[in-house]
Image 1 (cartoon, rainbow, N blue to C red):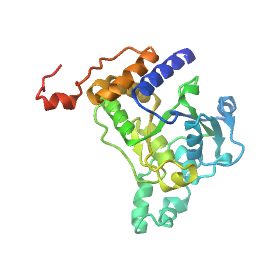
Image 2 (image 1 turned 90 degrees about the vertical axis):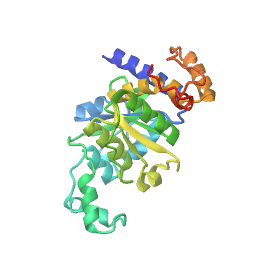
Image 3 (image 1 turned 135 degrees about the vertical axis):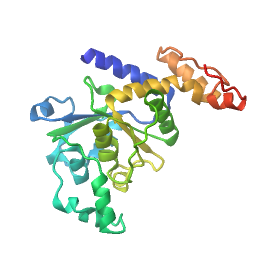
Amino acid sequence: MEVRVLINNRLALKKISSSLELNRKIVGVKFLFTENEYEEADAKAAKAKLPYCVMVKLATHGYGLKSTLETSSCGGGTRALGLENTKPEFESGCEYYSFGLYQDLAVAKNVVNNITFCSHRLYGVMTKPLESFNEKPDVVIIVTDSYNTMRIIQGYTYKYGTQTGFKMTGNQAVCSECTAYPFENNSINISMFCSGTRYLAGWGKSEIAIGLPYAKFLETADGVYNTINGTEQNAAKKIIKANLAREKLEDPGIYDNDAYYIRLSKNNNNCR
């Protein structure tokens, strides 16, 4: 099983990294349900308290970590991931209302009611670059710009059709919008980040986060690869073809002057 996982990981990473200009490593997230799983997880244990989103940020730079409730410093993350239960002050909406993000308690309560939390209970969580995983992670997180986000959505749509259930509030971005929601709903989600993680992790102003289940990441990477010809302009196609050749990947059928919008401009709407 581990050999197959490695092969799948490498092929998907080759396809997506050849097709897109990614400046950060793609992150895998693994839920650790027992103390034994935590001890066996192949990553350094966090020595000090830090937020989950900072763990993800470190993984985009190549650093793997595992953490428990005791080494987690953000209640939003621990609740969303299933490391601890919610408390009455959160459930009432009072905690969110105190943030100054919602005009009244009713709106704050509505937001609380609609935030996605993992329904399981964890002992710990591990984050590290996807390329470092020998087993299947549970969730994959990609941090990139708006153009690459478009291409990833196109790759997802190529395989699964329209995703109609995006959920964004600008709050609990990495933990809920990019981890809990994709896992609980088995679907892709986009997050514009939140002010908290932008402060704590220092993401770039133009960066966007995408979360999706591991199996759907594999298919989405293939979808991005197979939509190169229909979406990219000639200059990008030249670079991508060189990338594919370097990675010894087959050309999926890339031709100059053959994107869908070029065909439409020529009134060529025939099915192929």
